[in-house]
Length: 276
Ligand SMILES: C[S@@+](CC[C@H](N)C(=O)[O-])C[C@H]1O[C@@H](n2cnc3c(N)ncnc32)[C@H](O)[C@@H]1O
Image (cartoon, rainbow, N blue to C red):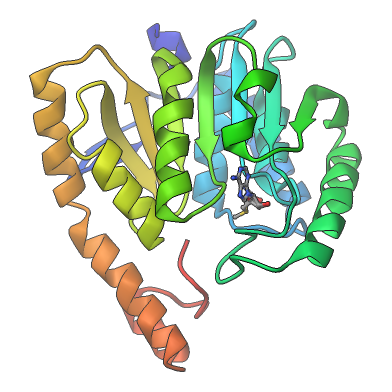
């Protein structure tokens, strides 16, 4: 990827932060557009913090004309509206979500069939209202069954589908394999959902072809690189450095489950909600 394709982000890996370059007029325009889009998704249900929205926005903006963005797990469209609003008009955008009532959200693993049917209708209505319905092709399938519906390489892959170990691992492995060199893979609920974290440990913690670039809360950012032993070493160190964040998230979940949601503010969780 050329420098111009790299998102302008302050990232933090193992405590080392990389400052963004100085602002230009077009950066300010993009900032204003971003703030407007962020405000517009305020009432769209989902799990995406402002920092995560910014990471999605910058990553989508960095995809060149003719490129392709794939999101696995779109729910009611909150993250997809950000991606589609940021992307160049000549970028293909695909949302993969079966809206089948499984892995819908925190503690909603099975049996949400009625809600899922309405998720699909709300997803369509939200994209329409945001003016991006024509920009997004929805593949209403499970991700492992959707490979044939997406042609060619992927420049930006956002994984936020099933959070159990086996499907999360399969998404990273089989969909990640389709990301171009210098392309980006973002993963939600990293170092927070146990299944996702184990999938990352299996596929990415010692990877040679993905470089861990940092995260915004639980959204991790990986770049596809040429394989090297150096990359493997830096990945191991960077993933180990996230152990305290993982421990904090697991403790918050235990406390919420045990009925002490309010006390999680002492762990930097003022909302008392499941961390994401
Ligand atoms: C946590 S929600 C996604 C939230 C969304 N990215 C947002 O920010 O609004 C998870 C979604 O993944 C979908 N899902 C579950 N299993 C899936 C699978 N195997 N492939 C694709 N999507 C899946 C669910 O239907 C649900 O809508």
